[in-house]
Amino acid sequence: MDTAPTSIESAIMEIWAGVLGTSEIDLNSNFFEIGGNSLQCLKVLNRIRAVFEIPVSLAAIFGAPTIAEQARVIIRAVSVSEKS
Image 1 (cartoon, rainbow, N blue to C red):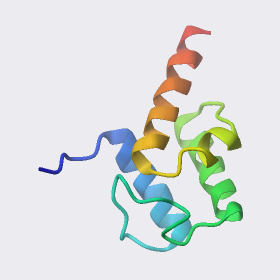
Image 2 (cartoon, rainbow, N blue to C red):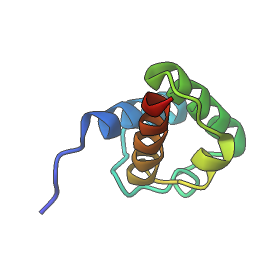
Image 3 (cartoon, rainbow, N blue to C red):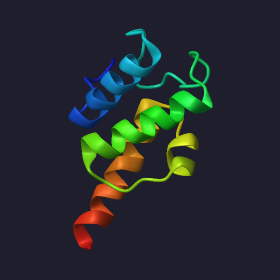
Image 4 (cartoon, one colour):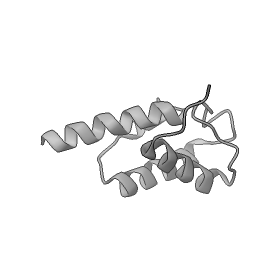
């Protein structure tokens, strides 16, 4: 049974769809396997930084190639940001 995406996952899906030009994305889609490249990964990173207003590194996003993994990166970054 599939679960509905969280608000964070939905926002990432929208970012990916805009950058990749496709809506054929699910929580476990691998960014690079569905056609993403390193330049597009930078675009995703910049949009994530803008939407969530958090500092997150390229390495963190590059190393988390699925929506679900990127959501976890964002949750951690938000948690760290709130503690500061």
